[in-house]
Structure formats: structure tokens, C-alpha cells
Length: 100
Image 1 (cartoon, rainbow, N blue to C red):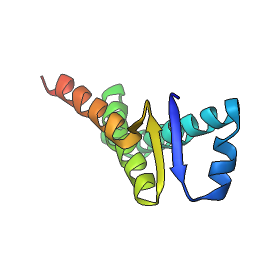
Image 2 (image 1 turned 135 degrees about the horizontal axis):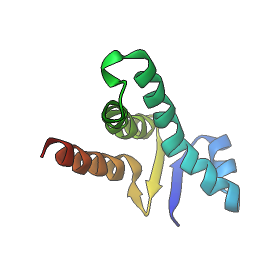
Image 3 (image 1 turned 90 degrees about the horizontal axis):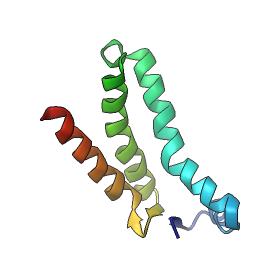
Image 4 (image 1 turned 60 degrees about the vertical axis):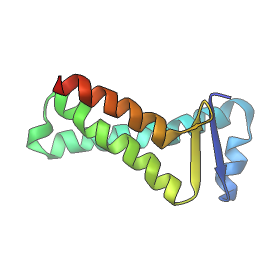
């Protein structure tokens, strides 16, 4: 299991239980919304208009989105690790590379 979900929301569970479509749906739920919001932030906020700005916006929005879903009791997992922990850790590593 690469991605998984635990939730009481019935429509999400019903889609997630479908073999191929469910994994793709969970992947979209984890990654697509933060990426689209990062593009929006890059277009609206002048300081984020370059590639580094997009990376910084994504480093904030990706763990934030997944943590917000976790607080709404939509628990998303990547390799049995909560998605917000995994992408938050990756964002921290990326931040250290940018600073150093």
C-alpha cells in the first residue's frame, strides 16, 4: 500500500476502496490541492513570482493542507506514515538545503 486513507466520510471511503482509482484519488487529495494553491500564490503574491517562491509556497502549503485534512478526520497515509508528517519532513529537508 503506497497511499491510504482512514476516515468516517463515506464518499471518500467508497472511492478509496476501488483498486486503481482509489489510490489515484488519494494521491490527488494529498498533492494536487497544495500544488494548485502554490500556483495561485505565485500568481497573486509578487514575492513568490520565481521558482524559489513556488518552492517556498509549496513547502508551506503541502504539509499545511495535509495537516488540515488530518484535523478534519481525513487521515491520509503514504507508506503507512501520516502524509502531513512525511511531506512536512521533506519540506524541512528542502528548507535546510535552501538555507545552507
